[in-house]
Length: 269
Image (tube, rainbow, N blue to C red; front, side, top):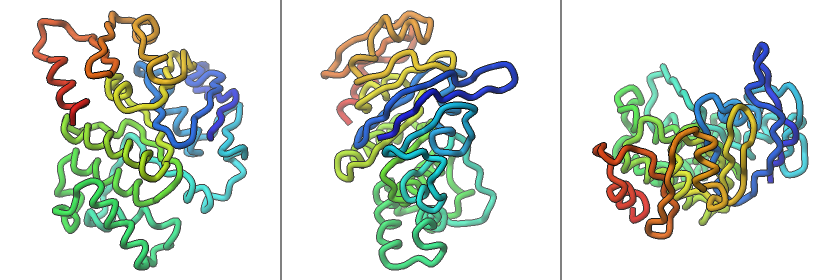
């Protein structure tokens, strides 16, 4: 369990995160949604101690996260930031092996290699593992970074916009893998995501933010409601129940996008 109590962050005269208090359940997928500038990524950085909060506290299993030794924390939480830049000439396998550093300190043992192999298999990267990172497409690199996060083998995994640069097929693959990690390994997944339909289809709980505050949080079906989302995003949104999933329809009916195509790719994948 992660408890946020009165978390705030101020830049200049603006409170980008304003007195946020919310609990994140263990063993679930919790998605943070909301428009640009809502404070989602800033809040994620404070939860993971990448950024200091100006007020409030983050409790990880009842203990203030600021008091945890860095080595201990690296075995409890993993974070994939929104922007990743790697200028080193290293292979896919070498990058994924960085996830084992909290345990191996650079000296990989047999168990480390087994976990690295498993992360590569999870992300279906076998054919790329000896390729250099700079030879891959943006979407392929994103899958490698997620594999590195999986290899860290922590109880809590934080992902900031992990579907960036991914096509529909690989976006669905990532979300299915996150569900699998929760189901098979009881991981706790916290994800910042812009696509509210991915959040609806794959989350257990959703925290919706607006203007630096939590507008509403709860089980996904309690958050994915027309009146709630229209207030948060300030646009017309219809909700359709398709194949048992609450799907948000917010594009013009004359555009090429198709709800049926979206559902076929996501829900039945």
